[in-house]
Length: 203
Image 1: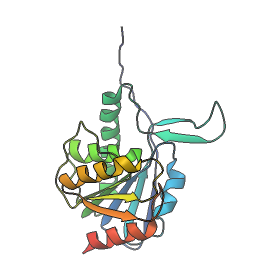
Image 2: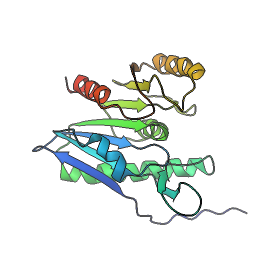
Image 3: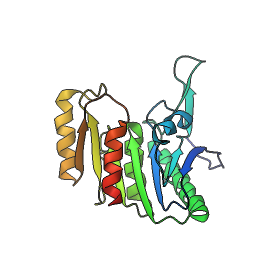
Image 4: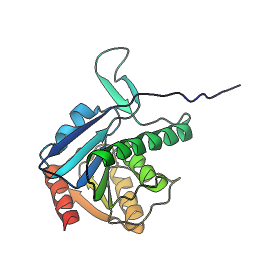
């Protein structure tokens, strides 16, 4: 017989803030096997914006029983429990941030595995996000997307999305009202494309 018990757990996140009195927060959710202390470096060039990088609650050794450590948002096992826990944890970050900053705009970016978590957070939370950027991630089939000023971003050489599936994924996001952005590159955050999207969202 399986029994669940709810206990407090300590999560961690990184924050980068340049400029005086920023009013926009960019939440960035990392991909499978990444740690936020490295992932946030991709966004540290941004100014006049609060960048917040939460870390998935499941840390593990990337290979074997030692060496490099990565983090994950969930697996297929007990996923509904993990989804609920993730949303409570992410809502808690926003609640804390709201006390520290005068936030007027919220932008949510999910990269790779973090894309599904970002979509679920936006759709299941009471928090109002101004825009969602899904970067190189399938849309979870169990979630209906709220409408917003949203973007789907994919590189033409993404090694994790097969070319025969790419057109279907793009079509799916287009049907959900997403703007489609493509760039020359692999499975990574491409800075020039990111900057163009954020410039559009600032206007």
